[in-house]
Amino acid sequence: MVDPIELLIQGRAHELGPGFAVRRVLPSIKRRMVGPFVFLDHFGPMTVPPGGDGMSVRPHPHIGLATVTYLFDGGIFHRDSLGYAQAIRPGDVNWMTAGSGIAHSERTEPEMKASGFTMHGVQTWVALPKAHEETAPAFQHVAAADLPAWRENGAALRLIVGTYGGRTAPTTHFSPIFYVAAEMPAAAAIVVSPEHAERGVYISEGTAMIGDRQLGVGDLAVLTAGAPVEVVAGTDGAKLMLLGGAPLDGPRHIWWNFVSSSKDRIERAKADWKEGRFARVPGDAEFIPLPDK
Image (cartoon, rainbow, N blue to C red; front, side, top):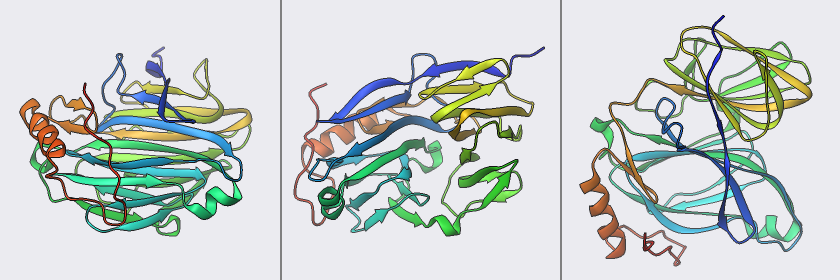
């Protein structure tokens, strides 16, 4: 019998700032990408008391990728160098195409800091195909109500990006991709469609069984290609991210917040940020300096 799990990756602790820890799942030594997904950070669930810090990521640059933010709880306020200022709430999607270059900040709103809040979400980076690496930067917000949503054996699923099971999300994308959030009550079962060449199941809350293996929070199961795979929620239920798509057109280099098929292009981006040639983020005068290494 073929094992439905080709590879299992465990997220590792990483601190984005004082008191704001994440699980970094991709890239991994075991695997750099799943479909076009080249980066996955999972934060929370965490409870921030009234007056707490929350998220405070100062303006920083990106090239060659798209960022995708999805929340189960809480909120983030996004500002970017194109002038967009957008709050994201649970179930919504912020898709930011960096392309040839963009800068943005991600912060907790003052009102949310004052009242206290719970924060839980996932941020991924989608590497762009070579033909689109230098596309013009852009930003798109899609409200939860505008995303395809359905139920399967008691589980609630929402298609965040791409195509899946005959559904298509309105979110921008540049290569074959799927990204689904699934919230499953105890013992609920869903089947991951085999339609995409590369597929992963990430456990963001609870536990789930795939075959004879129990997975917990921080586990990313890269599925064996070509067959449907059943996922069964544990006794406390589960929140999952299903993700993947077609393999990208070659490897990608990652340095800090830059992704590219060319090391020389990353060197240019480093120089551009250091010398102040990226556009600034209106309304946010701070910035993160270029790291030393």
